[in-house]
Image (cartoon, rainbow, N blue to C red):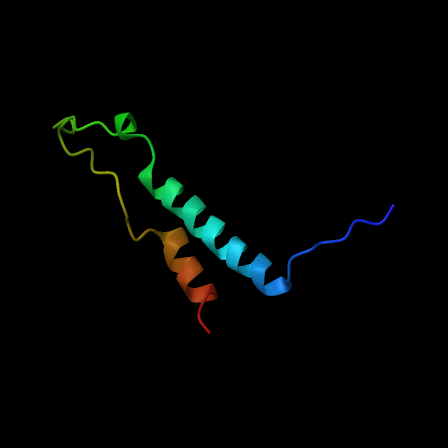
Length: 65
């Protein structure tokens, strides 16, 4: 059984662009209830973060071009 497509390639590409834009729009809208506007907890600084330690310095030496 052979299936024939009555449309053209141009029609297919137009539809693909329209439906692709529609899918992108739906992805951007998303559910509004997923976001919360609660303030971040304020605490003491833990001192964690970026530190230039010996193993980081060693990596920088080996990663030079």
